[in-house]
Amino acid sequence: MGKGVKGAASGEQHENIEMFDTAQQGSYMDRRDMTKDQMEDAVRSGSVPHVNTSEAVDIAKNGGWEVDALMTEMQNEINAQGGENNGHFDLQFKNPKHFTWLIVAFASMGGMLSGLDQSLISGANLFLPKDLGLNDRQNSLVNSSMSLGAVGGAIILSPANEYLGRRWAIIFSCVLYTVGGALEAAAQDYAMIITARIILGFGVGLEGGTVPVYVAETVERRLRGNMVSLYQFAIAFGEVLGYAVAAMFVTVSHFPVQQSQRTCC
Image 1 (cartoon, helix red, strand yellow):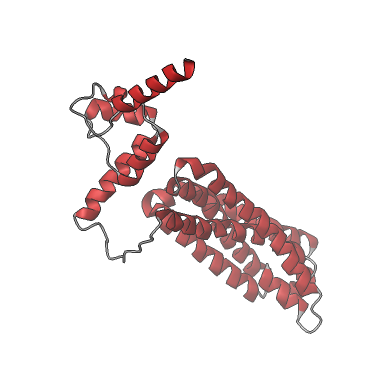
Image 2 (cartoon, rainbow, N blue to C red; image 1 turned 135 degrees about the vertical axis):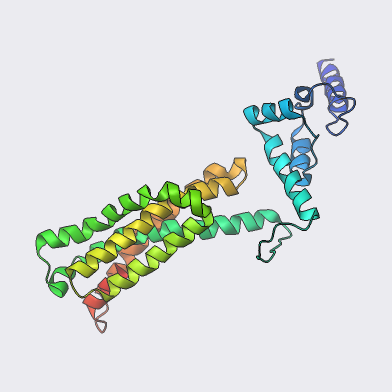
């Protein structure tokens, strides 16, 4: 008897939550009681009831699937009108989720770079004092200068994201990584390697605060926690990889050890 009543109630509810028939529904809140399948269909298609201002405020306050669905609907309308290419080419995937995962994977590689730069210097420390004629105080400053640069990167984090946007902020951090790494490899004295480490630190500070936010804004809600955790995993993996690379170059007998360690750091 209980199952029959429950089944009847479930069937009646299913008939009463027709999301697209806005003319026969009451307030917007009456249309929020939807099944999981209906929510997924709405998000995929972007087909949601058109709402007035007060209903839009309700969506903003409560969040949920409606925000994703409305954004999808607006994007579909933009695409129907020719899109907003701004000089860029269109890249389409049969499954849009694959594109999202690809973006997250490449963005998370910034975490691996951060981990590498934090650990590789430990191997270089074995040879830098002799190679560049550093005393203990100078060698200590070489180690800590990247952290000092990261503070500077954190300071420019907000204006860089505000005026350049997430994507260009990440690209700029990659440029800093490249310039800093190249200067380290070519360093001939204490001043040059300190400058290189500070530039590298700016890249670490800028990338470390931008990539997690970019990932969180890119993926859907139910995957956000896992995808941001992937970035943290990439940092840890980069640190382990850095120690491994330093150890490998130390044991290569026919390769100049000092130069290899400077290139790595």
